[in-house]
Image 1 (cartoon, rainbow, N blue to C red):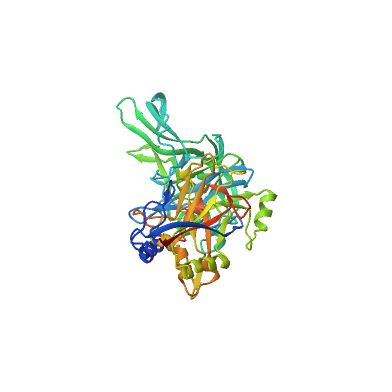
Image 2 (image 1 turned 90 degrees about the vertical axis):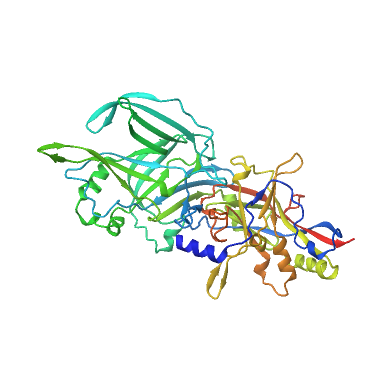
Length: 535
């Protein structure tokens, strides 16, 4: 995966790529085309044109393997992973439930458990949030709850108990959905072999079968750090980094892991992932909230004792085994939907000829929107260009959020991110995923218009250079007039450069929106073109 992304960077590196994708202001006309006029001789005239916008059903399925569960790349080129867990039900889009499936591996081949007669004390799963970034917030760092340290006199350390001081700091995770806190997280054994060579196991509706319940816990919507300090000498006994910890079944790990010491099942990673095929994290409820976590930072820690004999004396020291759940394992974001019949009917009857009145767009395999410039509109544009001797100074597609049926009350404006891309093309048998000419030229992809007293929130999708390229081309195909609008953002490297148009966060994007399409209101989707003319 890392090699593929690095190669993509080399091929698609954009020398001039604006770091700001979203601007919360009304834009001035883009500067493209201004060089065609004498200084101070251009007059901007904005002309509206109809476009055709329609819903695209993605069959509630999306590629969601490890290569797509990413939010970006760090300075070393390693992917920063993001997964989604939870459930949420609302009237427009119905029920959405997100589970997560991963393989796991032993830390080393043919592990010997430090000595004979190993016995499990406890097993803990730790779910951690990703680190907050300038673009994304995963936990609310400024909502810390730190009641102060408290004492405990019977904290177990080896074969004894000691007096300790425990300091716990708690932060709420960023939620999409209802504000309720309690949600039950379940961990099941996976009984299907996750075959990464099978395309079915790269998608969000992968045919994964689960077996034994390994653990269950109530998640209160918070992640915590914990520090345990020994009272007698102030030494640190335990530091738990930010996360949510839940207990797993001791007996399962005793019989399925420790009791297999020296047997073929633990001999190497290839044998192990066919023996213990993985785990699935899911939630019991259907109407709570979705939240994001870091899949490569998941931990399963097995605490166990073993016999140690020295100078004729046998002791039972405690140690740990940490399973590897990181990027070397196959991951799948598994998503389920229960759609209202009205929603399904709208998607099934999408009208690519005259467009749909309402447009539904949702991440994680939900629907997208197609936007098409008609040949009639293109002819009008060409007449302005060649007959009236005008030039395109700026062009944007304005689309409003539907004020009657939808309000983005579950997210703030910074969370709502879109990508606008041409359809995938196949050239000489090779799939190609192009950027729009505007994005490739470093122009902002869209501008956000805030809700005011007289109009709802809207997005202006930048298509200045895209439209110029089409209108000035002697030949073009029907696909040149189509753009796809999706929720999510381009995956970027540490320098802010997108990895490629095919690498987006759509597989983990929790947002959704209802937009105004081709209805008869003043809010209908429009192409707004600004021309420059001689005074």
